[in-house]
Figure 1 (tube, rainbow, N blue to C red):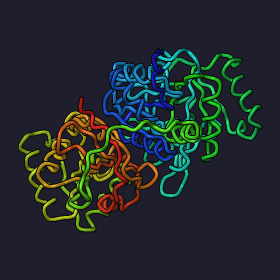
Figure 2: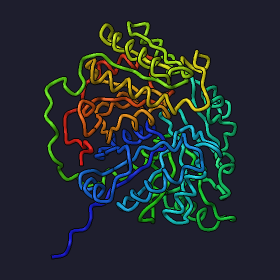
Figure 3: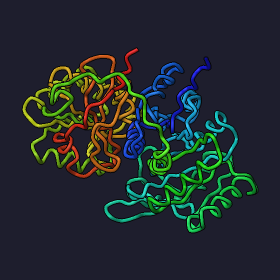
Figure 4: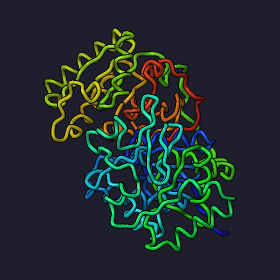
Length: 460
């Protein structure tokens, strides 16, 4: 008897930070694709088993915060493993602000690594995400803030980002500073053409441009543009490697969802009584974000009876200081609907950032989460800050996440899968610094769980 063909994924992605990874997960989930996020690169046998149960598998990484010379060791194995599962698309998930630099989290280096794994075809790059107010027009990138759309290098937050300030809005020039590969573009006028003519223009850009592009930036200012771009990116190739935001995830999910086979049933989920997965009880927020939006959310929570506990990035690494913060957090959770442990209140807040604060902030905040889950009955957690969230998740030892509740664009409450209790089943929101409305933390406290289903705990 012939051996049955191995299951094939519809799509796969590596996220260069954890919060962005949950955005991609949510985009595929919204389209009806059964999606799983892993917090580590799976082995071949595990990936084959998961491909029989899921349409989309992602790996959440930390490349966005890594020095460029360390990216290949982080990214290469994940891309190789995901590509071997045979998905139509392997996405390197980037932030819709495209923030990166030649020294840290280089998107140019991500393009080069992908070409090493998947071949020398030009790499599509789609950073736009209109539902977040992020647009690309004629290669130039724009981002909204406080109701105003700014050219990216003039957007108040991203132009002053503490690690990767955006000083160039033309994505072709921005990427060109990070790689020696030529960067081309597919502009807005292509979407006005009939589909066959748009495809001819795209193929000509790939094959006839001089010099031949190593990457191709796609414009998009509407959700419809995202779908048209995905149609072009997927056409005529059995497997495509592309860089993109959740906008690319949305476009690809929209194109692939009708053709996706229903996932094979997995083992039944662990039965949980009502509320056991997180309903009720206090909420813990831990934040390493300096974003103004996160500061607004913290202040809103404090104004509604939550307790705030500062964690000083300069002295919080000491065991004594961390013990004081732990005790204060547990006391707050016993008296208030929620507690917020924060290292800053916006870019002008009290944080005094040392040379590498993430090296201790992540483990310190993870310790507080573990203590609150174990000793304060916490079943809902928010981690604010993209780089912070990656370090917290790795320090906690969580294995996977699936969407539990969609709270808004880029804001999804996830169910953690872990091999050990009590972390398994905790619902967690991994939030980018600029994501969510002012009342987000309080809304997490009242979120209703999604219907239960099979879960991947990561137990081996």
